[in-house]
Amino acid sequence: MSKEGSSTALRSTLGRVRGLGSAKAGTHHWWMQRLTAIALVPLTLWFVIAIVGLAAGDYATAIAWFASPLNVALLLALVLAVFYHAQLGMRVIIEDYVHAAWLKTTTLVLLNFVMILLALAAVSAALKVWFGA
Image 1: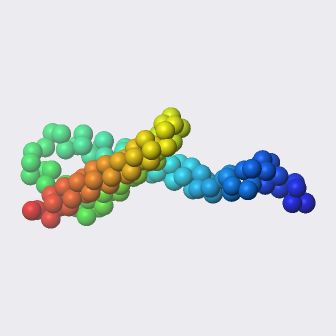
Image 2 (image 1 turned 120 degrees about the vertical axis):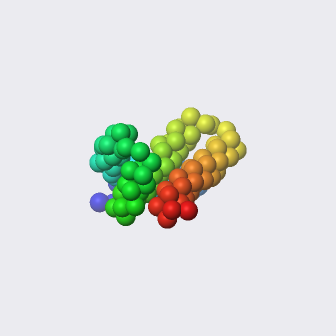
């Protein structure tokens, strides 16, 4: 196949000169969104079942539940997957619907900051309860 038949031939001459085109990140983003969605299904089911089981218990029951390393590990996996998946989804919405370059950049930076801050708060709260502080 000649160079003219490749994907670069589908771009305009100006696009080729400017280097515009695929940033090679779309596939990774798509896969990460799908993988986190798949991971969230069993993690969410586990969490809902655990919370329903804890609803009838008291404070000591909840603390005993948190004492299990497996429960804390699954809870941390759930928290990280939720915030990463949310960040990926919100990023697509912002990139698609915010057209002013300065506003898009500012919003994406704020999105990343907020998601990291909320994830750290959730992880630190879970670890604080686990360590009994």
